Amino acid sequence: MPEIKQKLLRAIPKVDECLTWLADKGVAAADASIEAAAPQFLLKKAVRQNLAKRRAAILAGELTDSADLRKEAVISDIIKALRQMMTPNFRTVINATGVVVHTNMGRSLLPAEAVNNLKKVGAHYANLEFDLATGKRGSRYSLVEEILCDLTGAEAALVVNNNAAAVFISLSVLAKGREVIVSRGQLVEIGGSFRIPDVMARSGARLVEVGATNRTHLRDYEDAIRQDTALLLKVHTSNYRLIGFTAEVPVTELTSLGSKYNIPVMEDLGSGCLVDLSRFGLPREPTVKEVLAGGVDVVTFSGDKLLGGPQAGLILGKKAVIDKIKADPLNRVLRIDKFTLAALESILRLYYDEERAIREIPTLAMLSAAPAVIRKRAQRLLRRIKAKVTGYANLSLTASESRVGGGSLPEYGLPTWTMTILPLKMTVNALEKSLRSLDTPVIGRIENEHFLLDLRTVADADIPALATCLIQGIKLSGDREQGAGDVECP
Image (tube, rainbow, N blue to C red; front, side, top):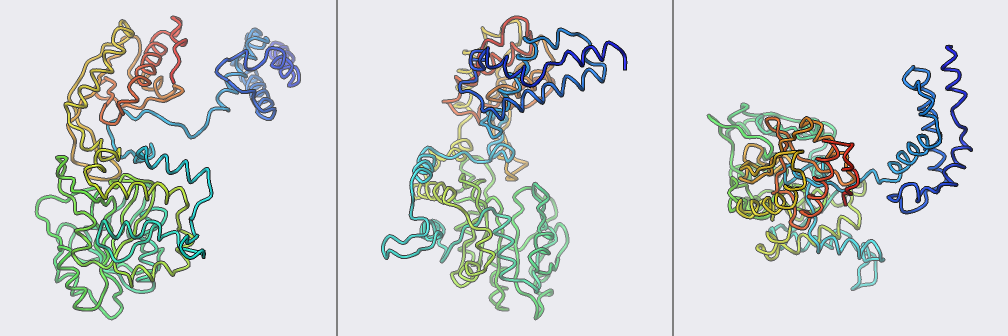
């Protein structure tokens, strides 16, 4: 080993020595952003990892300057690492992508009423499975079942932890070991490789495909019915569209066929919604109430997409069918907790007044926001930051399109306004990374070498914080030597 490497290796400080340095200087004094003293375990972990990193860099020939082993340099790096360790992994971000139901960012936001209910339930004991009327054990599902039935006309309802679970348990209970008939054009795949054929196979049901990819007729279903047929399944293709020479069987015709042969009919709506989306300028989607009115025995859909609530899988339908699913042991494996119930009940109660639901449920409020309102929001943001980033970036407002997201209506855009940033001292990719690396990350999108912030998915209350973050991110990435790092992002 070359003598210079040996000399550098010997100069690496000891763990105890670094801990003494930190104690003498004081972590809080060294970095005011670390408000509370770090636990001793994390202090030692940060020191050991930092020293190991320096040792590896010396051996690789990447660290050749002894100045990098001095007290000030070592403490500075350890504190940076410590700060990162003490930052929660699960953090809030500012979603400026324009994708309303963004799966990677937690899908639907909850209204204030639901958040307050979560706080109450989390901080106190609650009647999760305690019947206050009888003083005996109750059912957690009863807390929301009546509300769901009121809103949709269902005879009974059950909630599990997501829609994949809702589909799985329904197939398992209703068709395990038997056949389920599905149109070939409805064998969907959604994010995370959730495929209807795979879920069906795992449930124990046997798939029978009918029709062609683009056209399926009622006779296709009827010709496939045998003694072993347990279920007719209709899957709403919410994440893609077939156009052109196409045909599918209306739910009313499918339920009539089911009645003729005494075979239950199930529809998986996927996103599912309780309001007519066409009033927002979007294509008309079947509501849960309409599907149930068509006579299906069971319908499944998500709680955290177009419904605007927490992650959940809702199973609604005829009482005899829902009671069978409730009684299955698998139901306990897939059951929801008190936090999901608290949030879901708050969301559902808002739907008793549809206009209030549209105003207060963030997902619906974003979907229904008029372009003129979004433009004013973008103008507010522009006024806050334009003068402060002069020389670092050119800013402008641009008409664009938002997306619903969550696998819903993928080909339809909502007219919106974006603030467009053309960085002058950095690449657009460097700016994107800089904004993503802030204490409160800002997530936008890149188009034609510009960085776009879609204000449809940014709340009015978040504009001041977003402005501060943008000033920091643009200046920090553009010129790190000009003290831009002194600006703090909330």
